[in-house]
Image (cartoon, rainbow, N blue to C red; front, top):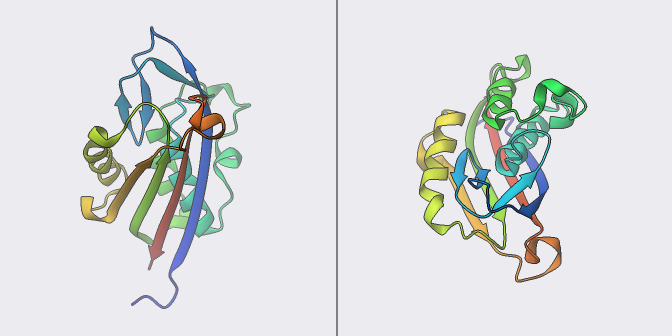
Length: 163
């Protein structure tokens, strides 16, 4: 066992608005068809944002907003998979590998159970991991707060890094 493992946690939340013209929302790199869209500077993928923050935290390398500020027009509408690639390419990642990642998606609607296998596969691809090292769980907020009122989507993430 590695004598110096590192754990990072991440969190992200974005507003969710009804939009019948929207093809859906992106979560964990997967388009989830629904009548909503996310309000965000980039594509609003809370799952990938939380995972990037978890990685950056484990590395002691700041946070997503420091690396990709929402004040930079270059990031407007940007695919969050680009953020993942950039974080994995940071010099701070040298010598580290991701042992596993775990993700909580907190969303009242749309329902995600049918999308979790595709999400795990996409995370495995993006983070260069076997699928069995990528946990994805979805839960509602039992009708409470902005998430329960169908006004937001959130994600919590944990990653373990080893040398």
